[in-house]
Amino acid sequence: MAESKTERTCVACRQAKDKQQLVRYVVAPDGAVLVDYRQRLPGRGSYTCISVDCIQAAVKKNCFQRSFKGKCKSVDAADLQQQLIAALDQRITSLIGMSRKSGQFMSGTNAVIESLRKKNSLAVVIMADDISAAIGSKIEALVQKNKIYSVRLYNKQFIGQLLGKDERSVIAIPAGSLVEALLNELHRYTQLVREN
Image (tube, rainbow, N blue to C red):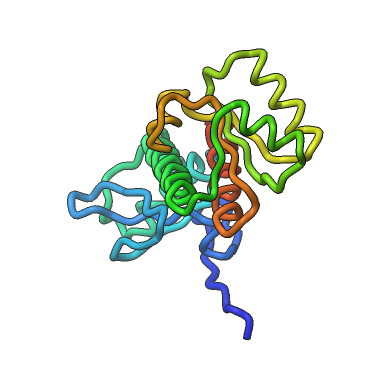
């Protein structure tokens, strides 16, 4: 039996979508509007698309005040965008941590390059922002050749910390149960940061 999808409407553009494709907001006890990215907080929710345009339009048109019947403080679009980026970042690091615990990852320049050359079933390659230009170009060429999604994110030290290792320039995650969720969050994160 097919799983039924619950739809919600973006308060800004008025498009109805599966609620998992939208951002949920709730009002905190102090009246502040909070991003409820995992959609778990109690209380009445309000939704927007995962887009800077919709967040800004919702604030400009006072959509949150209407949706929450005036029970919220004034809302700052930049603050909501930063909350959302932080929530996405937390979700991405959590998924990378899960891949580490389940052994579904590969790290280190030589190991990843060798695997890319052998055309193993890698699905995502994350390179550090501070990877050397020469190594970054070599990996970029291989991921493009193999049609693998790649992104530059975090620095070598932080990637190493995520994996419980020394500095790492690159991490690769093979096709598997975590990849779909990770790809979804990475697409959302990079789009939002680009729009910001």
